[in-house]
Image 1 (cartoon, one colour):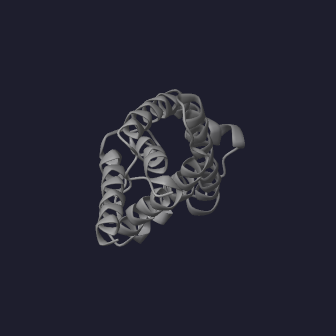
Image 2 (image 1 turned 135 degrees about the vertical axis):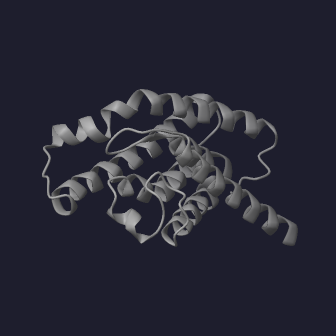
Length: 181
């Protein structure tokens, strides 16, 4: 039991660390940069399962909120006042959803990841509306929000879904000993 717990903690920490690393591999767009975080969020749900995948993203968010500069917006409680907060807030739920829906085969895995990506977009766009309306005091029309927070990201995020699905499939062939079922 002890060795299994150590593995779970290690894999959870590794995925939290990779998500943090993904924030620093970015293309700076405004108000939301392109990062590799989505890739690692989707991968964490697929390879760790729903509970540990969500936990890894919760650990990432917790470390960010206590002040470690792990997000594209930096670190600390002020991250909640950045336009990217909604996307970050969706990470644990997206990892959980991917882990819950993920199954055998590239297509099923990709559909699970598309569902997780949709959840990230939903929380991100909802908060982006809130940010512009109540924090920046610059109300935006829904079409503007889509141009700022969704449409530029679709091609890259679809590539991340395909790559994460492929990587998860390859890792699954190694035995999936890290997955918490």
